[in-house]
Length: 418
Image 1: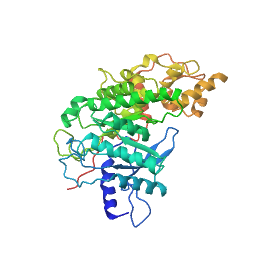
Image 2: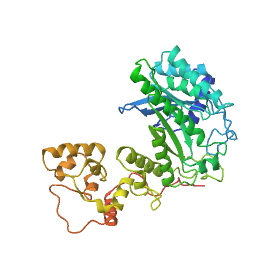
Image 3: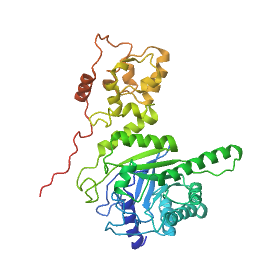
Image 4: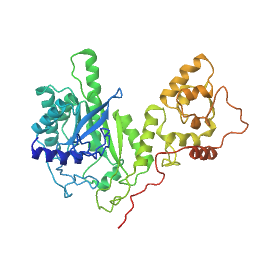
């Protein structure tokens, strides 16, 4: 690898690290003392397949040149950073070279915007097309959709990419206008809607014609930046819910804003990224997609923010103590899913196991449920009868006293010595 390509790789892989829509591992291990490997600078990240396998991706930008000046973005045109751009052939050669060395199993390719949307999208498509048709590359390809690109280019991109994503940037239109006045959520909705309709149309066509090509088989995703603008958790999750429902997204990613600018409209450099909040948002997202919760049950005008000290499922249960305790031997599956400490896998085991007899607490523990948390919300065959209904506040204090959360309740910045 030439020095110039190595330099480009360092610049464009570093610029790509702020995009979390491919589930980066977040590792910062560096190569020291001429050892083997370097997890921080080579642009290799990890993502997970539908069946749970972890695969490595080459995660880079095509360029960090950009015609936009979004205040939250490290690649904004007014930012004084070193710029670089790969050619189409350089990205293809890097991908094939890394793949043959068994460094990666796929490519995550995003980009700043050269000149205009079509000019940039056309180059992303050429890379995917060249990998598929000329190099017979069958690895995973995740392409960024460039807002404003023509439908012809999006159609061609969908034929070669496994997944496509487009960044929503800020959760609300007002937040986006505050930091990126040249952008609009409508510019995101149009390509999302077009690709969604194309996926449906080609799926229908495949029922009649077996040779119909695949079109974005891993679906679409989006990402929003959290904490740069003052949206409530309710506004963030309502926005995510809208995009899940209207555009059939596979994932919405929540990226805690890392201060990179002295712009007074955003958190100052040195302040803590909202990692705990990011985690609570992902937990809420999980409850909506896999536990049957409606977003309005978790967040509403009365409760616009997620609790910091407890997870959203426990928070909901404590606000709805009249629904508990449930009899684990008779309750339906959906209600078992709502018990804090019981996950999807454990709920399925409970439903299967109770066909053979009434379940006791020791059997529930053996199934892997967090019994110390769940016990306040369930009754089983050996539960002791209680005269008084449990009080939500008391239950919360007991659970907090027994828990040892890995998250700090108050974000701590590193001490400044000078």
